[in-house]
Image 1 (cartoon, rainbow, N blue to C red):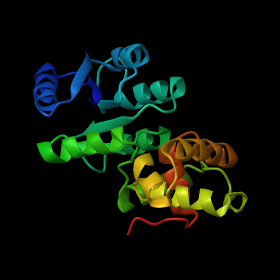
Image 2: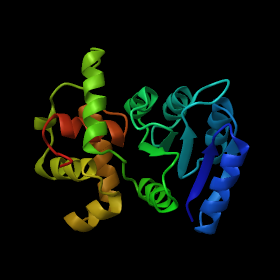
Image 3: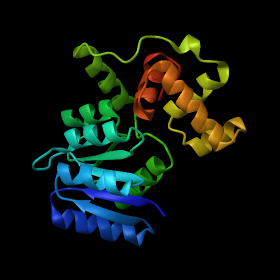
Image 4: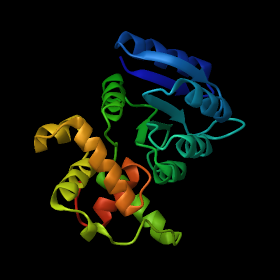
Length: 214
């Protein structure tokens, strides 16, 4: 059962999400009406997935996501936004959010997104990845410099599959290794490349030509 934390300042929207998710066999373990509540609930309950609205009072979704990921870099956050090109989405993905979902998405899309992220995937399409990379460049911010020569062949393949959206389970099946081995190898990759999370790893792999999303 996937455990989900909802963070949105509109009670009716949260209630609708709760009803939908629970009808699909998921468990809503908390509801936050602002960013500060989201941080507290995330720290207390360790949800499998956090659905985080971009715009909230007291502390917005981007800053809340940044704080949550500083506390727990493995947290799985999906941003909820009205607009695909929302600038705040880029900032959240740069911080380590697994991707975004539009507020007008249908139920099937939402459930699929939560399931994929709970399984370890990142919701990055080619346009989003390129936009985030462009944003790094425009602001003169950098992902770690080119170091993938330090990775062995197996680590490079794992990084490529991660960037292409495969979960740890899928990677393990494709490479005929255990999920534990995948997790261990990913930890080693993050250390070697000085990366904090899967989203940054996917962006790094795309930038360096290790993987593409075409």
